[in-house]
Length: 250
Ligand code: 13P
Image 1 (tube, helix red, strand yellow):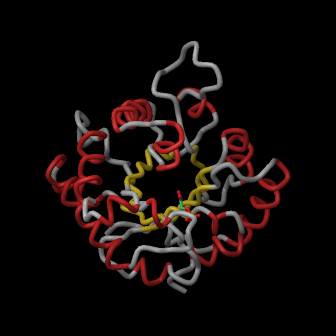
Image 2 (cartoon, protein in one colour):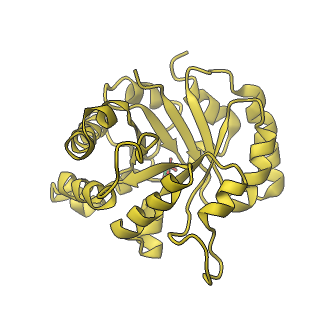
């Protein structure tokens, strides 16, 4: 049985005071221990959030990491730096990084290598854009993202992997994929995991849906057999909204 996992992605929102207010309020609200949760925050908040969430069970994630262990890469953050802040998770290959920063499937593969070698759990994002969906190429696109990013890993490397299926046309648009569309893609992803890494990984990997997840649509998404959680953007910025999403089963 896969335990539901709902993570927030703050993207480039919240200054220090906002992060503190959120942490204080959300720590009081989070009661549904039947759901794992994490906040993936900008780098500057990671250390503070780890401290603020101590004893609550709320985990903390980064939104990116560099693919090299260290070096002359001005402005970048290494896996060792994340590790020294006790970060639990790291989002990799978000569509905004692919779109605005040119990240490729090969970059994603190298970044996952850094994370798994250092004990930080990857949340790998995949998803097609609107044009690809309209041309009915979504399975091909996501299939390629999966196979190129996960090549060369062992079962033990990927035992703590989470996949987030985020169709780009549903991100920040208020346009959610239907629960059936999301479930269909999550089933394909599970099938690919089975083919590449076998039944254990396929059965145990949590697959999230992301794209305009709100308190009003989470229940229907979570009712789908292949959807194990959500990666939430906008609605994770407000403690009550995010907690209402986590309490989808109440
Ligand atoms: P929204 O929930 O704001 O659509 O963002 C989804 C997302 O990109 C999460 O990573």
